[in-house]
Length: 181
Length: 181
DNA sequence: CCTTTCATGTAACCTGTTACATGATTGG
DNA sequence: CCAATCATGTAACAGGTTACATGAAAGG
Image (cartoon, rainbow over all chains, first blue to last red; front, side, top):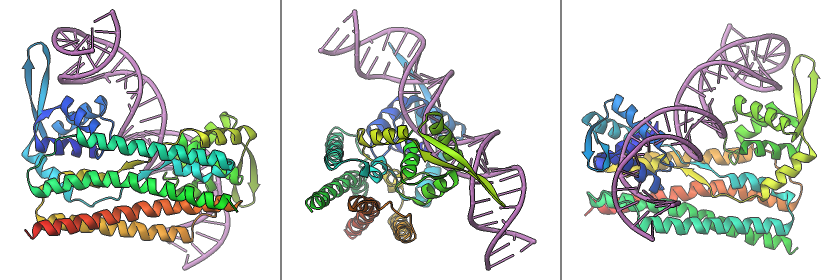
């Protein structure tokens, strides 16, 4: 039910087409969905059925027509209600931890190589994150408070990768201590 | 496809029934699934079809019969292969960040209350995590290295909540700085 | 007496992904 | 010439959840 609210949020900023929404969601890392057609276009139909958005078709010469969606008053009220609803702690799905639980099947070298690959993967992710931030989504920037919120959102994501990276490095250090005994 | 490997891992430790597996998965936070019947029992059938586990039915007086599953040699090889396969970075689904993106709809008091509720939620989660660790799953403890790995796994989970908590507190501090100007 | 534990399993549903289809236009 | 961009949409599937069903036994 929550991608609907992400769409509603984006539309609270500016009216736009499904195609635009799809791209914004695909590029954003806070909005963690893949941004696939099926989900976006279905969600928009549902939002429209619920009267939370409206749209008008805009014809274009030599390009396909597009539906420009806008948030309705009812939609804005619903978005506000949702933002105020009970906050949930993040869901973290870390497959690597499951692997590590059974990593005693490996010898020291294999384990170290595995951890090294994980570290590299995290570093790559961090660099991708940086790039994204540079050429990334234009923030609303309506108030200084909103600017701060958006800055802290990307700090949050960056922070969790850095946290994970520090953890892996700590683990590798502790392991190399063990091996030497 | 990965809950199969979690089950395989647990069975590499000890043969047990679907019911036991279900409980272990439900209690573990590293294995992030809910541990519902449908998923566990179906996965076991699939593992059996693939020849990665075998089972023998154990009759009990005045209790329902149970299927005791064991990992096969093929299963152990497959588990080892999986552990060595390319590690993936954690998937974090943080609905709260999506809410925050549109939290400029709120006034200062409402926003502060929202952040306060999030902070409390995280503190609760941390406390639950502590409890879980105490009465939690018996680790394999086959080697000092395995003991270290399991310790670091729970440190990882604890660490991500602590990280998030620090972030929220930082955000609240910065916001109260803004408000006073 | 009601709930929990043991132990298996199924039905219905929701969310999300990949991959396909159309069809014109622009860029390398 | 092939790929990508624009713009919409659908089909098939994978993964996961809740809730139901059975049926006996133990505990508060």
